[in-house]
Amino acid sequence: MITKNKNNFFLSFLFKQSVLTIIGVVLLIAISIPLAKNLSRRYRINNEISQLDKEIQEIEKKNTDLQKLIKYLESDQFAEEQARLNLGLKKEGESVAIVKNDLSVKKGELIQSEKQIFNIPGLEKSKPKPISNPQQWLNYFFK
Image (cartoon, rainbow, N blue to C red; front, side, top):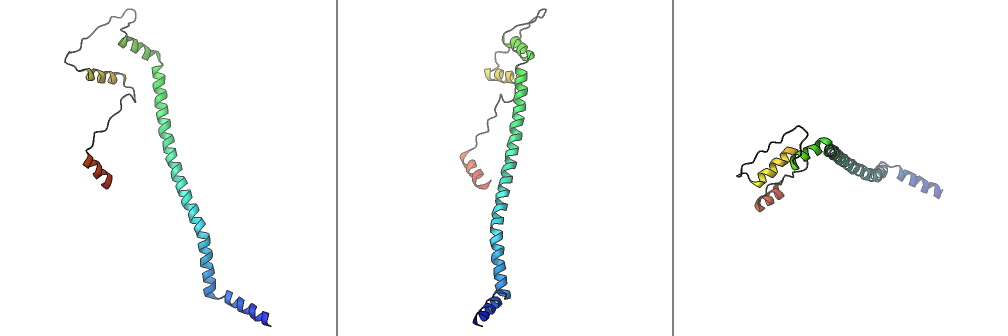
């Protein structure tokens, strides 16, 4: 009889509404913590994948541009152009006309005009304008 009372007491205590609520909340927390960790890990992985996809697209674009440049540099047209401009060569039946530049033209302007003639991408790198130190601090704190 004593064991039956103990079993009844245990079962009645176990099936009370407050005890069942506490057990349910504990189980819910025990399940939701690993779930939240997995969801945050999946979110970080998806962000990293999208960033890597963007990098891949940029690198592929640069690669195709460089392949086009290599193809142009290996072409007969480029070799002929360079021979005409730098070596002064000509084809049979052609005559060469030499135009003297104005002496007041600076050497830097000549180099700039040569870059514009060839229009090779990546040849010229733009330099950012120098920013004053106070402006850099303002940018650091407020942007």
